[in-house]
Length: 347
Image 1 (cartoon, rainbow, N blue to C red):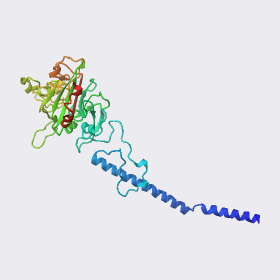
Image 2: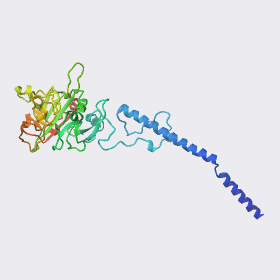
Image 3: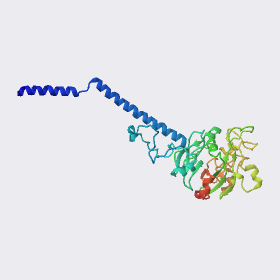
Image 4: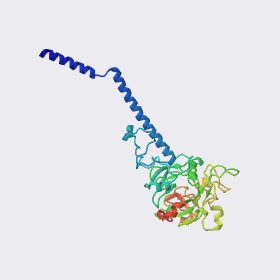
């Protein structure tokens, strides 16, 4: 009996093992269910990605402080932590947040000074700018001279598209006339020009409603060639852009309503030559200038030459003194109204 019982038990165990092993059809069915589950998860991930993209396009950014509410019908059981929005890059210059200017960026998240991408108009691709969040904050920097390492004696297309270095705080650059035009298009802006001489003395000039016209001709008009216009002056550096205080000089050196000129495109009012060629840089020349922040970079201040072609602001240090540091930066007038005069760092 014992032998028969053992044999029966062995047969029974083999039967149990054989019955627990899935058949090829069952294995195929399990793999099919797993594939369907994977496809469902990927579809949910794609759905959430499309929803995030719509939000980004509509609002220029989406907030990460709260988990997003997925679209109706989403299978929440298939969404894991890896499907939630990832952190936006923390380093400046690589953000996918495209504010209109540095003032809008300041109002939204109050970041530190640095390089960020902005998008002033819907039809323009985002571009990199330096945002100065000191001096009251919200300044978009258009031009900067610091050490003479960047050559500002450039042609028309280079001034149009911009040039220089956009990596660290003290880099030299010209943002580009086309980008500046888009940024200043509304006209209700405050331009601040910070100036520093070689003894580290500082001053500034403020201009309201600073704006630049289009390059090409508008309907039934002649080409504007980035014509400069500005309003009321204030500050301590003197109103060099308007030609200074001498009325007899203003007609020939005022920069208001002047077109932009470069060494290969002469749009000034000087009939005997080219102001841009003489002064080694592009600018809004008249016959020729009372200010030229894009001139030749001379070290140690006072200089000599055939022409007064340095980095000059005549109403402060004269035409024969080339400045050490210059910065042109802009923000909306309404920003100034809420924070004060904006005289800060240039004092």
